[in-house]
Image 1 (cartoon, helix red, strand yellow):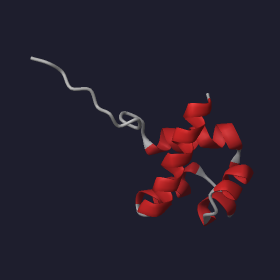
Image 2 (cartoon, one colour; image 1 turned 30 degrees about the horizontal axis):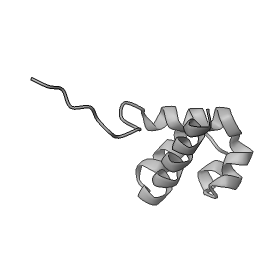
Image 3 (cartoon, one colour; image 1 turned 180 degrees about the vertical axis):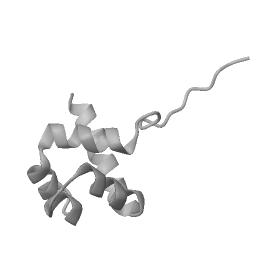
Image 4 (spheres, helix red, strand yellow; image 1 turned 60 degrees about the vertical axis):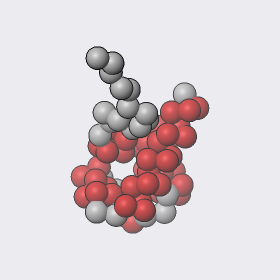
Length: 74
């Protein structure tokens, strides 16, 4: 029996881990400049960002794409 490996680079990484990693790397201010969404620019918090990103697919995609780009740099 052979095991199939998941090709998804985000497999096993939670949205919360992604947001925390980006905030640590960029900070809220720069992250808000890179991805211009209210939850990053107006009283930002991980909790409010997760709530917004979970129900807004286009914004989540932007965050995930930025995370993958950062991981390629590291």
